[in-house]
Image (tube, rainbow, N blue to C red; front, top):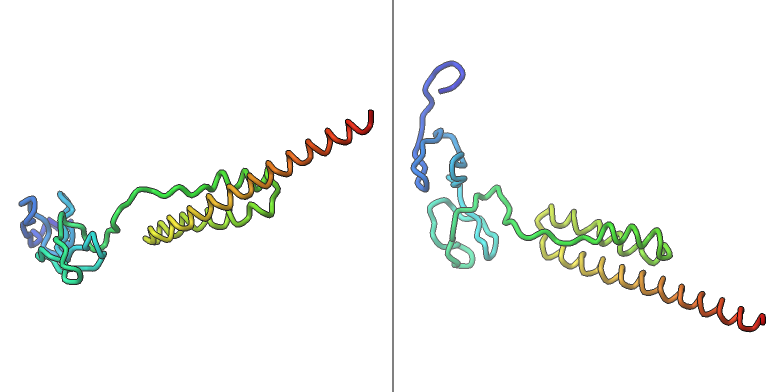
Length: 153
């Protein structure tokens, strides 16, 4: 019933058999989509009630509503490591790591999983380069101090 006490038209969900409002696009009990389904293989939209994807022919297992994205494991963004590298490992060479680390979150939230994985790889690569260069410079400084100390005797 609506707030005025008038009975609203109802329909039955074909997946869980619960009653939902006739205007509903998602079942509030089981999240069944009355609008359509998204293919897990090619991510194309398909009308409700179809069993095979109209684009790639894959079986539509489960019922993913069109409005929901396919969830995947979160991608490591290396943001904290990049910031620490920027602060402690020589600055400028860590900037690309920070840029790629910031792209990971934005690409993943936009649904570009492959782009987020690629940005994560690039962030890790530049982070490794920055830390390697910093360690190399530190070793060079230690050797230089040791040589100067040895010559000063």
